Each structure stands twice: as C-alpha cells, then as structure tokens.
Image 1 (spheres, helix red, strand yellow):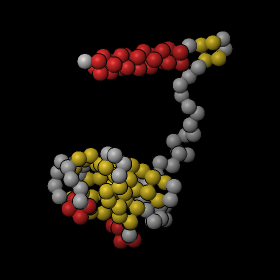
Image 2 (spheres, helix red, strand yellow; image 1 turned 90 degrees about the vertical axis):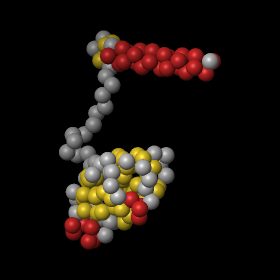
Image 3 (cartoon, helix red, strand yellow; image 1 turned 90 degrees about the horizontal axis):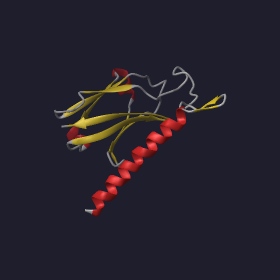
Length: 137
C-alpha cells in the first residue's frame, strides 16, 4: 500500500514540476524572454545518417528487407546492427558491395535468431548512425 502512495506522490510531483518549468519558461523578465527552443542549424545542414527503410514492419513472416537509400560512396563500410530493447547487440551484418548494388538486404529471422518483440535496427558508418524501430510479431 505504501509503495502505491509513494508512486502516486512521485508522479504528482513530477507533473507539478513539469508544469512549473513550462510556466517559468514562458514568462518574460523585462526585455529578456525565456524560451525552451534551442538554436539548431537548418535541417539541410544536419546529417541524420544513412537513410533506409524496413519492409514489412511490423514483420509477421520469416524475413524482412532493409532498403538502402544511400550509396557506398556516401557511407562506406556501413554495418547493420540490431539491438534488443535493453541495448544488447543481437545481430550484426557488414553491408557488402553486392548489397549496395541492389540497394536491398534480406534478413531471415532464423539466421538473425530474432524472436517476437521490439528491436532497434541501426545502420552505422563511421560517426554516422541512423536508427529505426523494428517490430516482429
């Protein structure tokens, strides 16, 4: 019973402080206006990493495709990494020249030893990384 009361009080306090921060962030002090936005470069300057898609997603069959929307010249030595929800690497696959040529990689669930669940599929190349959620039913 006390655990539930503690949890309720914790959630209530968290909401209270979130509201207080939002109110404080929108208040004006003289000629200085506080704002919660960050100064970011335009989207065209920000590199979001290799672009790709997963089909089908969610996966209900025995395989899925990773469709590459980039070239080897853009992201050389790219690697597909699949992590479980705890961040543990459960599958890794270096992208080959032949994969770049057809812009598609077939991943068999049995080869990757993936069970039903939610995973995070990343493509990494140097410092560039892009992550998409992968659901297997």
